[in-house]
Image (cartoon, rainbow, N blue to C red):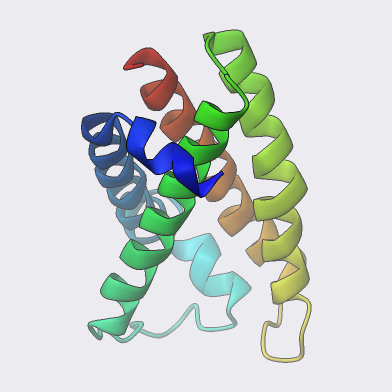
Length: 137
């Protein structure tokens, strides 16, 4: 499957990555800032703003975007309907499930809330990524 890297439309990958990453910034700082902080048990605090909290999610979003692009190419996903199905499978099957699994630990006081907020972000992000990549094939 790695051989699919040569077949990717890198402009679509870059555009999809930028939108996915920017969605995350808006998701956690604007759209769901308060519920996100509540899920972490830190609703009365200002969360720290360190470079790892920007660079880390950017790298992860890029990896998810490139992986999705490789799978879309390898699986020959060519319609928006197929992209939607692909996104639900990958989004729920891997990203949402893994996010909830990571959240279920003693350090996250509201793991289901955290999983819903973060998992929904990844599901929406995967939908956007897939639609962009398929639309620009």
